[in-house]
Amino acid sequence: MASDILVADQTDHPGEAVAVVAAGALPWRINSEGLEVLLIHRPRYDDWSWPKGKIDAGETLPECAAREVQEEIGLDAPLGIPLPPIHYRVATGLKVVHYWAVHVNGARLVPDGKEVDRVVWCAPETAAGLLSNPTDVVPLEYLRAAHGRGDLNTWPLIVVRHAKAKPRSSWSKAEGERPLAATGIRQAQAVSRLLQAWKPPRVVTSPWQRCVSTVAPYLRATGAKVKLVEALTEHRHARTPKKTAAAIESLLEKARPVAVCTHRPPSPPSWASWPSTCQAACARSCRTPTRTCPLVSWWCATWPSTTGAASWPWSSSSPSTTEFFGTPGRDARLTDELLLNPVRGRLRKG
Image (cartoon, rainbow, N blue to C red; front, top):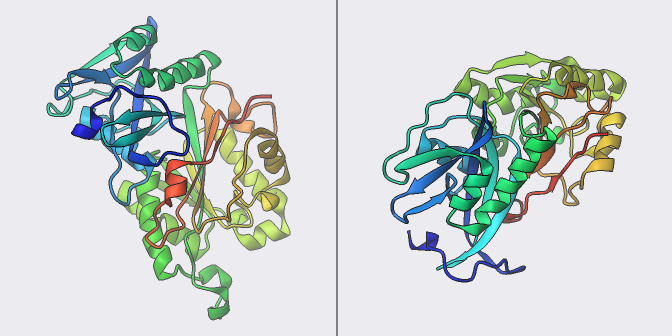
């Protein structure tokens, strides 16, 4: 399309309205010669770039990135660490592309034949010279640096606050049985779509109805395993917060991809109520959101797979990256502010 044709000026213009929002990924693998990345060739423009595409209406950035990778090269894999977005000017104005790393672990890649007709694996140094858009080198350099630090091969921990529930004031039965409101039911569907960008095979949740209902669409769609943990409920956290911390610590010790669904008191970004050790580590290492906690809050942390990071934050190991997402809208979609400016911090080791 015309909006993908680069014009002469590719400088970033702070404050300028974004005309085109897109997302994609940098596929990578390790072979006997070291790190390799995958470039795609687009016949329509005769250029070399990364798999990417424009965001669809109602879609979040991670969903867009995962979908475009699957559509263009047939890769159905979980997103890895977030990479720096790039900005450049196209015929319709300023374009921003958000990128993630994606590990290709032996999967067979099949170009769609229309958007992409060829792919090539090459060393990062070679890729930097082949890329047609100079700004595409920015996420490549970050990916290469992450590999050098041992932070590229990661596993995700995704914390989800339950979707909007019926008001406490209108509910007279047991608190654990309070169900989702109509808005929350829509949000649960959005949770399912967003979780599929990381594809956690396990879900650990508070057994209270509103938490179980929040993750139920994802469980039905993927067949992921689920475990109900009483320590994640509001009541148990209020009485024995150390047990809540221990439940999270046990997930970190396993060092396997997992999504955790809980309530606002025990979950970020309500940092004041998160287990004190976790709160202290996060406060030291990343910038927390200043906006009001949205109806459904996300905290996606990715840990290095080879560092024994399972004991963070109770030891010297901490997440490689964190991302914050929210779905405060009526239709359980990200607001423009969160879509274009996701709060993102880096948690460093030590």
